[in-house]
Figure 1 (cartoon, rainbow, N blue to C red):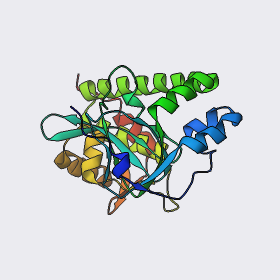
Figure 2 (cartoon, helix red, strand yellow; figure 1 turned 180 degrees about the vertical axis):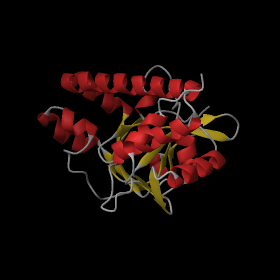
Figure 3 (cartoon, rainbow, N blue to C red; figure 1 turned 135 degrees about the horizontal axis):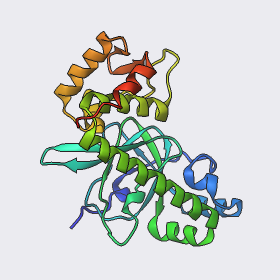
Figure 4 (tube, helix red, strand yellow; figure 1 turned 90 degrees about the horizontal axis):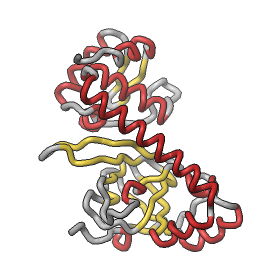
Length: 240
């Protein structure tokens, strides 16, 4: 059996979302927003805190109000594979929808995070009322499926240096860059390894190689891309 449902033990926050930034609020009927406001709950998580864990019973869907979240899955006995990231406005926990009643993945706060939580029954009611939201949710699922298929293909066929290069490009496209030109998320080398599907030691070595080749620059955990074209070329190299 999965773990007990966590939100009741989570730290509730009195901050309220603006009802216009998240995946749900942007796509549902304007008349439905007051109903969402009446049913949502807001919770706060510290950096590194589990929001829910793989095997836990599904009780609802989450939307990021502030901060960043990693969605990950067990990969072997002691490893994890990061499936995706979520930031302000993004939905997560939706992989628990369907006939399976337990989350197939875990979610952890990469930094201090505030989330909106919608319980499963109300979310299902929302689907029945908001047809445009259903359509866009289906498109979102289709995009996620295609991305998952690309990632599995890359794990099987792309050289590890190319996977790390692809991960850096994807992180920049997802989070943007700071004024200093660094990717706007501070990932540990272990998290980068989990996202690229490799080991910490390999990431450490290849990051040093890419730095020496002047494709990237680093400052602590921060990484800046200096040559996108050459990084992209690495993603076309396969192990075949």
